[in-house]
Length: 133
Length: 398
Image (cartoon, rainbow over all chains, first blue to last red; front, side, top):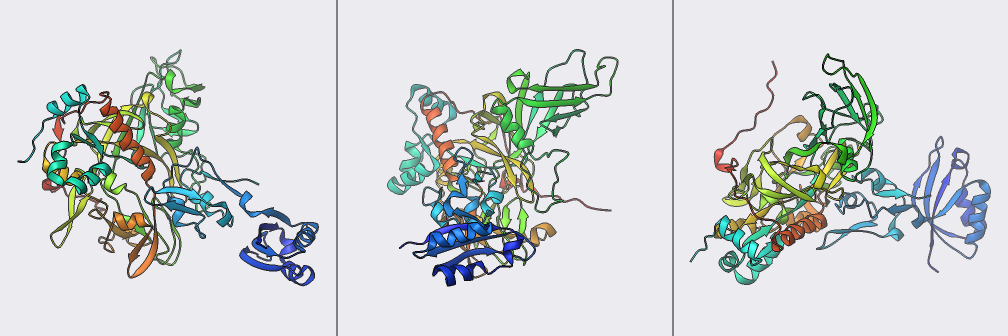
């Protein structure tokens, strides 16, 4: 079974709750935390890989708590009209989702590798990387 | 026997559709296959290209008169101020100008989503632009206020005039400090986290004619998707040849001032650009044809990414402090490979200059020349070359 890659977004009320523990303990899920930004006083985001028969039940548990659960590769989209294939994004993309083909030096975007860190949306000089919620 | 050709001979061949035109990358392949002498004999014109952010860019706009007449003392285009210290309804919109209400870096790092470069792109995209002007009123120009919309085609003249473009070579930027810095060379992560560079290397116009043997005042070029001309040397034109133990490492420091009719250019080749924490600018597409008048010119036009180098500079501390020196040199072949060595550490390198777009420019210019639509111009004046030994000045403070 291949892992389900999801993005969680949640408010300050959730940040203090051990939700990942519940996914493991109550729903018997194998959870790999790819990226997490969780602070007690702030809204949090988390990127997870989840494997398990009860994964839908586990995600519903999160939704019932008020956590936004989203498939990962829906988050970031490249605006092909705006992208000039300079490559500025390829030096800062932490997972290599944005990379250059060589020798053509054309920029490619592999949404499966994207962890929605949003760095490219700020660093792209043409603002060609867009967040689609 | 070494080959000698003239501009007139090459133009005669272009008119007959017989000129042999190749891009700088195609010339490299040809030299590898047939040798330099044979390639220099066969090829008449080599085309180059670059597409990158070039801050010293802008456009003179002659907006047309209002009724009653107005001497515009302040002008804003989509909220971005244009310089009006010239005649009544003339203004210059600079690529790096920002809206007056832009938060700048007050919320660091600032986003700089819209500026003069974006206004220029919107103009050539034929979008209506909000024009606001203020005047102080004179007997001949009584009007004091104007708010309307205007398009490029409604203006009398729109002349792209970029005082410094097509930098011959540029620093490879890194950051030695322990904090992320946001520069005109992009975001640089601490402790040599990444390296950015901004030249098309073996396709870059001035790297292919480092001694300015063919590129001079009046040279006809591809500019912003249309036709333009080299107007003069660019500002901060400090041509030199970098070398390391008698080996040439490529040209450095030459620049071009270029101009052309904005109305025949395209938003694909003049693109508003934003650098996080730095500012707004304009990415400009430029292609310069190099006539192969002799083997010497061909030899430089055929320089490869392996033979052309960029200095590595620390933008964390050395650059802002104006400390001379660098961290060594790196070839464009290494830079384009995506990984370079700096201070013994392997780091990711990324371009700010689009290679696919540079190739497209060189190919477009090639097709214009092949079709006989674009003839070469012999410079009316040479530009200063490395032998002129121009020295850079810095501001002396009292």
